[in-house]
Length: 437
Image (tube, one colour):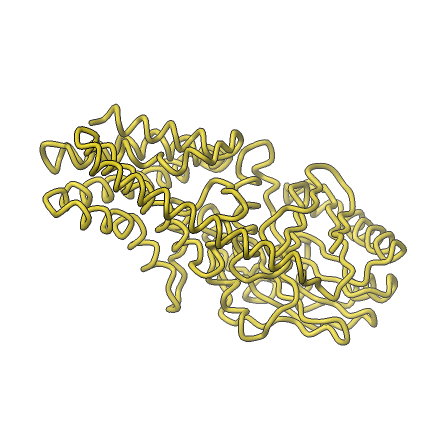
């Protein structure tokens, strides 16, 4: 049973970045499901799930090795328990009728995700990092995230896998196997036709944000000692890049999440002066101590929006606490798009707010025209994490049918359209990204 679990883990690893062999996602669960269902005991099923989880998640989360080792080990262990839970649950329903097993398999995988992706605070949605979408699916099928959400998309993936599992199990009875395989094919064909129509409808009448945006990817170092010793250089870099963006026609300049020395939220005037000098709206991300002057303790990840006259016209605290590595980050609890008359409404998804669906969904009542995902993947440069984080932003764009401009300090900054297509990128180094709507 364990070899089948390991085969599933390998198929998953081939389907995620950097290889992106996304077609494997439609059968990657089949060996794991079969191994768990055929395990002679519940303990054997648990070992099957553990084997899958240890191999897959230790490689999937290897970017966390940039953080202290206990964090990586803890995350891999927690994610492995997800594999154990799923395998044991599949083993528990193996005695049910065939069609009931097919229906329950996707329920078993996604039930924890539906539970954590809930409207009740606080966030538990980081579990989506273990059980959510990790592979860039074909564009028509990606559109299923619009009506179903990411969790519903996962349900659909598992349902196809469950039909193929039963088709394989019934291969000795070709007619029955054909019914299961045919059901999987019909699901895929129907979803493809529906998704293609959704893509066509958008392309016939595309929506465009009412902003001319520039993302300023400044590529400055992250160590606190450097930032503290180079405050004037940081300020000058922001000023120069804002001026250049304005000279090239931008009316909204985005800066990424970056811990700027000082409490800008309570003392915004010098930074408002940059917006006033450039004559643009400017949004930047930083950290704000919950208690004034209490640096290094509980902080908010804060996005500040300045008007062309230098006024601070919006401040959005990140709604999602960092899943790992920053226990001192305190989450905000209010989501309100910043009104920028006469241009439109800007919603800022700071830090990990684009990792799970809930933060973007909270902005829904204010009807944003654009999501700015101001993130900081700099500590994980050179790993698969920036690609995985960008995929989360693509899902948020599809779910909300809204443009997302993802702005990071050193890549990957990108412009993502409401279909989830990455239209432009700025992978590494310093530069300005100008999305073309």
